[in-house]
Amino acid sequence: MIIEPMEEYRLSRRQVLVLGGVALATTAIFGLTPFNAKASPKEARAKLAELAKGAELQKGRINITLPKLTQDGSRTRIKFAVDSPMTEQDYVKSVHILAERNTVPNVGTYHFTPLSGKAEITTRIRIVKSQTIIVAAEMSDGSIYYAKARCNVARGAGGCG
Image (cartoon, rainbow, N blue to C red):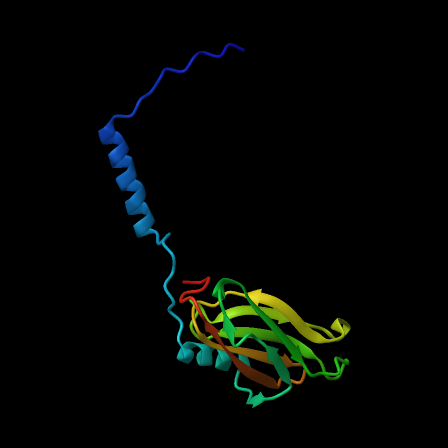
């Protein structure tokens, strides 16, 4: 197999400027710039109502551990535990974490079975700015429990904005 040498190709200054302009326009058109925070507490409540599917929301059974103040919202530690015997008759089916002021309210969803043993998760989430975090637990009998906790971000925008 014979490989022929490639010809040297140079771009003119004008061609470089045109390519740069095209790249900038493409970025602007297709939204590759960072998202602004668009969610609101109203949207988070709507998402919570959607998850409930008409069931009555009840307070209790959930313990949230969230710092009252964090220096950096891009990696905020959160822990939740749902009080449940985790038996075949009474267990936690899923837990949803909602943030009132992130780009989208739904931060994460975790699914459980009676074999999980306990409904408890420790993780890190990104929050855009000081806000209330809602944790909702869907139980095997269809009931929905929820709890709220507030976290203040010290340095303005966190990891989502």
